[in-house]
Image (cartoon, rainbow over all chains, first blue to last red; front, side, top):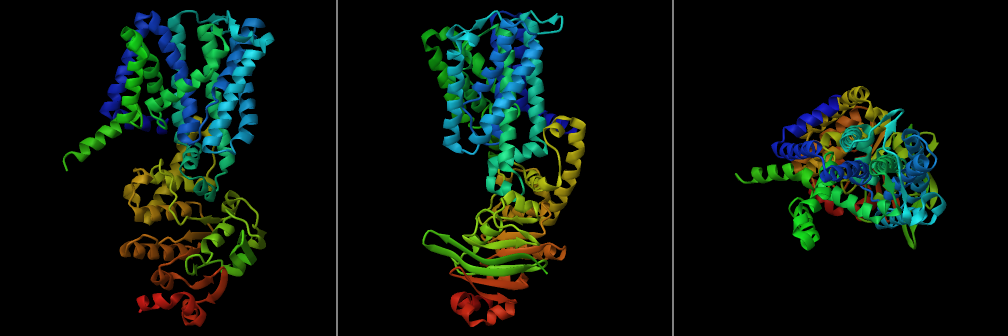
Length: 325
Length: 256
């Protein structure tokens, strides 16, 4: 636990970030106690935290780009949905099969695709997302097309079923936290350093013996796994799935969360997911100006905290350090 | 005995002949320098040795192995590690972490290690102490925790060498390590190079700083227009009329 506790010590020494986290925690506790509509909003935030934490490993740590991770959420999401709703499997075995399918897809897709770089990789992964969407629409006999699949049972393990919204939210928070801790563990290991090295200079990484193609594939598969976990949790938490759920909208939302929260940081994905899901709710009373206000706030954050919310403390401390001089 | 041997290496880029029939041997110990005017083919030679480029014809041997068409990461695995003319650090990693990446080939552990806290801590402790020792040697110990991108230029050069040393090379290839260094930093570099050579790692460097080359190199290879025009001790090279004509003329005055 050494490396993790030291990260924690470093983080909590920082009052600004501690304040941000205090606020986030207070909000989640408030929602847990209060319940109601916000409960489902924070549930979505927790699911997206998992998705974005995974995306951060591939994009933030390894410096690659993917517009297609929604495809992996779709693969496991639909596997869970079809096996439980149509064939009566338990959620756990269905999810395990779904995640195995995700890893296989990521391997088969990643192997040829990851030879591409920059814009070309972006285009190829975008195509993967679109293909997954089309399959979900057209493979009607299994996916029910645009209609989607409803009546997906809630999460359960054996005879124990989580039915209350509160229980689901708690479980999602546990999953999100585990995902974040694993991500931090990866970042501070030999594996994670190799990822960040590739982002810094592929040539220098190769010159030190790092098999760049292999490590990119590993990063891709790990982040696809996170996307798969998010996909399966989503269909059980909401009880419904349709192609739109894992469409381009998911990718746009995840990108916003990643950049608003802070790409490459441990805490960014969770902060970004909370902010991006809750902001539109905050501006609900603006009625038709809701999206305008939401967009304006996002732009302001990106202008004044280009590294995302998680980088705010560093920004503040460098400002105060500059002042006395 | 030689570690590195090039046999009739020729490299063409379209109509341009960057290297023409270059054959040379680099000793298994000590410091060898490659000098030559800009465009003489020095960096192309380095790229071919380190696997970032392949010769049009000819072969490269390291020890008994033919490494002519082998990927850079596999060449590194055999103990041939290079640095770059334009410093290439991992900017998002700390100074210490950069050196830890250098330990990649001599450490183990993938996803499972990263996720088992006790195992991770144990592995980290070992790599941590090795990396810190190297930072000490490079005089960067007090900078360990800052991001590599925040270092001063001369320190970046030193860090890149420390990182390469972490890979425990048999032969260390340095592409213009003194470029952009001030006098004091160059002296520090010279001391470091001698230390490296004394500890048993052979060094092959490309360098424009003639006083550094004359100061540290035991053998000098002179390239001009892609051909080897001289190969010998500093004294021999200095006395070679071809070399003086091609390259040393203007630098000689600075040396005196």
